[in-house]
Length: 390
Length: 245
Image 1: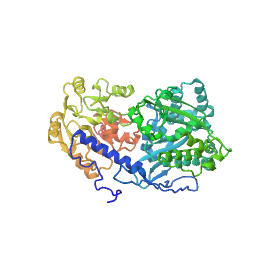
Image 2: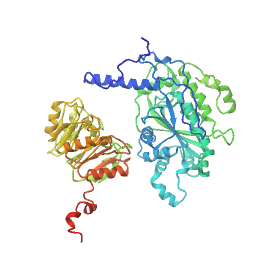
Image 3: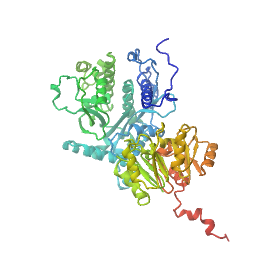
Image 4: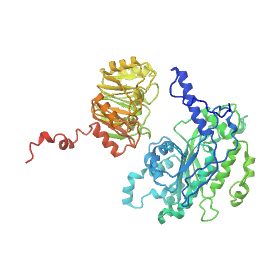
């Protein structure tokens, strides 16, 4: 009997044997564990397909030769093929669930915002399972031009009043939570005069999405932006994708005592900031400026925050449970232009740096492509420096 | 009249509220606007009671009731039970029942005369439902789903069921319940009808994602437009106009 054989009992929820609260919670845990396994343990194979007009709709997978993190599971590795799709109106409910906490627990026109994301089919990607018809969405990534949703005159203003007040509410929210006065001025400028050059980067996903998907996902986004600059039917649309700056709203964990006291701690492997999404750390480094503010919803308890510590920093066990509070980080990074045509070289940083994070977890360093890419752009830290930091 | 609203950016208003002909229960913790929309609509007609059940806010799915009574699950705390007994009218009997299927709102769909129940409910529970709510209980499924309370919204004047209910099932249920039924959706295609909306004989509250089409279907099947001037054109025409000359 090989360890990979699936046991006959697959469905756990059909007929619970006993009805005590303990059995119920045990059954619930077991079924949740099964679903998590399906997400985390998967073999992906590499194939990259770009259709000629720039719409990336293919099977994106990365070769994994070893699945060493499988010792606990007696169920074996579950295959999952993810595919990238253009946003469709049918994806409304999935995208809405992912974007639910975009602005904390603020009540705003969320459905309108989701509609805007789904309207823009040329730039934006949703991640779903390849063959199944179910609408289970795992991730959504898109870039929205802030200036496009602004009225240029009074008539448009009245017309847009109903549809795009979500963007106005978003801007007002960001302005209201920013407590640094010099940044508020810059934000105001971004939302008014320079709005046409600003892209709001929306990237939401389920927490256990395999990190191998991230480099192709971001590559796809930035590729679509550059293709849109060339391929969009009207001049106005083409210009609307020439982003000079990107604005990112994201969530991080900040250590409550993260103000210089960390050196005194005996366990100095605790980081002051934990990034929920790995690429946020890179974006934060590359950003022109950023600010953070506390969230009103309490997302996780401190014990779960310690779990995040384990995942991203690869340490075994912190002696004391750090008390983390949930913050939102809003930051902005200017596009690093090697030349005027290429909109951004960040994806190369993201690609190999995320690879580094991923492979560090698996105790392997993927050295492919580091040297050549870092030569292209001096702004990106070299592989050597990164591994020293690690 | 149907109203669109949301609870903390969530369009599933049937989860956080329970509306009957004699009272309305609303979850605590939402913004005041959620509570005030109910108050504006229902004002002095019926009491609007803020409550939690078992410490949770998903009260709409945990309890089942009509104008005669309210059934709450065993997870309800004593304080909550007392609060409900104090706040609701005396004619409403509040009963806590011991049933392993504790999400009573998902298992029971009822109006003032008849109720549909989950096929696996206990016999004692079925008797309690008949007793406390004063209804006739039928064990049924809707479009193959046993959670009848989730996939059906029912009042004394009409009912809305899961969109994939077949015509035969619709006819059968309609005969059982003695009200007209329509298969439809709420909240822009959501099949979980009772989670997306809550309704009584004269008003309905739907999630804000509900499209205009869905809203018009809701208003017509639950006959919420009765008080509107259009009644003259449709229903009363025959009694008003003697003859066409």
